[in-house]
Length: 331
Image 1 (tube, helix red, strand yellow):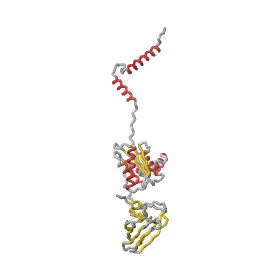
Image 2 (cartoon, one colour; image 1 turned 60 degrees about the vertical axis):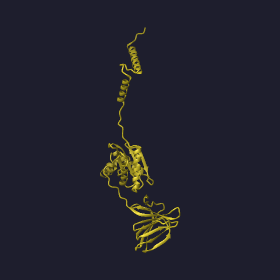
Image 3 (cartoon, one colour; image 1 turned 90 degrees about the vertical axis):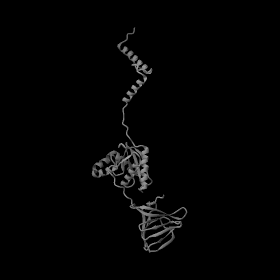
Image 4 (cartoon, rainbow, N blue to C red; image 1 turned 90 degrees about the horizontal axis):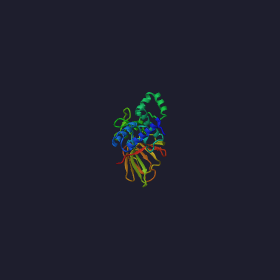
């Protein structure tokens, strides 16, 4: 005859209780007879209480990052900056958007990311980093070692905050002067609704770029010479092969001709009127530059229109050199 032991009774009791509880729950009743809705609410409450709560980190979205980049590059072109590279990082330091303009140098992406990463890593814009690096060079030397060269302590790295002043990312740019890089980044962030730029201390106004009036003479597909008005940026080097100075007496002129070789013609004195066979005319004053490349086709002519001699310099630039000519914007 079977005599249940204490262990077996406990076992049967456990099985009975489990079955009772399971059956009750399946039938929609807990052991105390509560309704299904109340039972489910208690289960959900227990699960919610047991689930760890993690604070979500606010971050820049791809849409915001793309808008910053596009607005910043539009600013760069509108202010005739050198080819720019811009990088946008989220609050984790991950790259969300990066663009390089044509003509950007190979190291520009690394520099742009380094500016943004340095701003995130230190918690303030790289304009502050630049000033601090001068005041404490040993500390920033050690910082550069710790960061494995990823910190770039010059202006151009700007923190991005939301309307509640929460840090959500950073933007870095490289291509022109550091101040102009920063001005471009600030313009890009300011153009996106809901974002606040935090560059650190107030930046100085962007450097004013001096432009020299210039005219570009070239041979068109129709075989005729054409002229485009524009400018060349002062302070930029152009590789040249030779320079020749020349003087022509007042009231002189020269009928239709081509320039023998692509060159700058820089007027030092005299006022001249140039014309092409297509009817285009322009007037040159002292300090103006003619970028003459119409060494084939119908050519152009000129005449002195004041009482001064035409003193000028011919500067032949190397083949393939960047002439720095920027055409005027057309409406």
